[in-house]
Amino acid sequence: MDHVIAETQTAPSINSEELDRLVAEADKAKLKAYAPYSKFRVGAALLSSDGMIYPGANVENSSYGLTVCAERCAVFHAASCGARSFRAIVITTDISESTVYPCGACRQVMSEFGNFDVYCLRANGQISRTTLNDLIPYAFSPSDLSKGQGMAEEEEEE
Ligand SMILES: O=c1ccn([C@H]2C[C@H](O)[C@@H](CO)O2)c(=O)[nH]1
Ligand SMILES: [Zn+2]
Image (tube, rainbow, N blue to C red; front, side, top):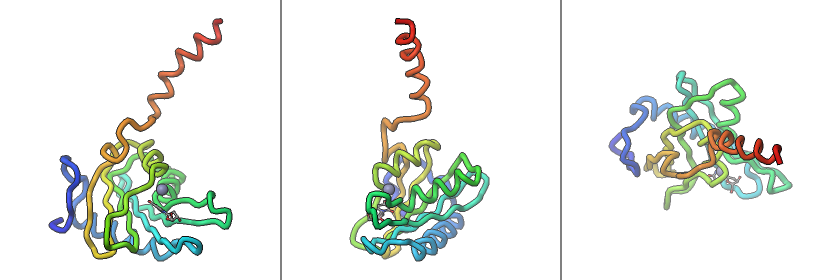
């Protein structure tokens, strides 16, 4: 874990063997990216609390806006297999010069399933560790929906 730069105060949620496996799976997933337009390949590997690893890659579309990022692909993959709780995600790109972090849409989608560690891997092997809480403070969350319930009832009464 020496090569991991911690950008958060919290303790790591996974050990170095788990990280190695996730890195290998994310790198493998990146090779399957469908990115003919941007040529920007992204791979992700999401570890569920029951020890399963769900890979994902970005999938682009000729109607550009329909593109789905690697992170959301991994989350939808996992959720559609029944997973609901996660310990960490590793994201990898071909960029060495700087760390690439998940886009806003993916931060929101990941945060639906709580707070977990986000490892961003550079092509040169350097890894930055952060958390969803740090990446998306004040995220809209499932509990926000119930807060609106009272308002809807009040409106009905009028
Ligand atoms: O965090 C990110 C940022 C971008 N992309 C994808 C979307 C698109 O296919 C390409 C360029 O934006 O990279 C991801 O998969 N994850
Ligand atoms: Zn994204």
